[in-house]
Image (tube, rainbow, N blue to C red):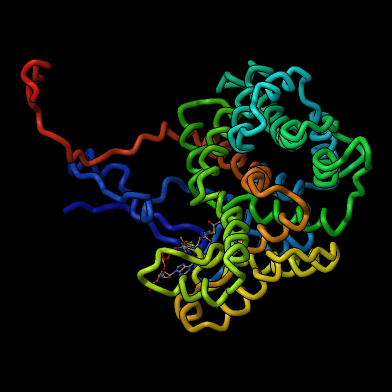
Length: 417
Ligand code: ACO
């Protein structure tokens, strides 16, 4: 009989500390997909899927989305507190100072064919930053120097995203404009044309700012766990973030909002009959699912979706866009919310449903949706990497239960049938 210590969090979440289990008993625990495994004790984000709660550093997501900005939320996540006025001014000024990227980065960009997926380009460019800042490779630099890397990432990733967008389209690169706020500057770098000045629309900026805030952290999800585990080998921050971008690329993680628009387009291509697709989603013998409905963690409602629903209505009204995808989305949303199948299983539209619609309305190409998610998740990745290093966490190295062949002798080629 072994007694294992209990660990309790500030919100009364309870865990069993098995840190010494193997040494003392010879047993390990098996938990594929880590559904029941806590990998760390973190002070960054709290979420309760049953109650629909999401808080960054204790602040409810609803209040942050309403009152804060993405850059202020980034500061909160990374440094742990809302900044005082002067500290925030300094942070903003530092980010602005580092928005430019080395001109040689364009040579790297030019090396990609125009068919390159923007997530592959972004993770490569994030790794390339190590070449321009080789001092970042040292894992034991002073916190001041690590902080410069943090600022550089926050400053340069949006520039690199915008440059990869314009480059793939053969459009002249736009440089950062330090007179603009973080999100306006990003949108201008994306959409400004030599023939037509991009007018920054406050409604669009507000919607994009909220999308970034709502995606900024989500505790130990797949990409964040990746960033922490890569960083636990003392890989530098650029490399760790690049690994996070690659993890986010998967359709089960950052690719879901893209799938929403593809599903809407598929419904239209098949005659626009939403009822037919709802019936397909309900059919247990049909693998089709309504993309953008349901969530692994949020079982009653997704607090982020509630916020973005309002933004979706605002943006569609303001931009007056009337694409068939939006009409189909509305029909699906209304029908599913009234349908017993979806009500019983608590399948509500999730954050991807609304963020997909908003980004489509703004004019962001759908293969760049996960890239937008990366910009939003960046401060979360940085905060989690920083926390992991501050706690001096050991290298991440799960165990396994081996189920392969027992020992057997090598067979010469001639004797293999
Ligand atoms: N459409 C139709 N039926 C669904 C859907 C859906 N989108 N989602 C779940 N169901 C049904 C399942 O068939 C199952 O029915 P059953 O009880 O009759 O067998 C029941 O609801 C429970 O489904 P699970 O798969 O057990 O739920 P789980 O929590 O494992 O899955 C998931 C959550 C993966 C998000 C799922 O709802 C899904 O596939 N949704 C569509 C994809 C999507 O939008 N993903 C983005 C999630 S948000 C994010 O990752 C940021």
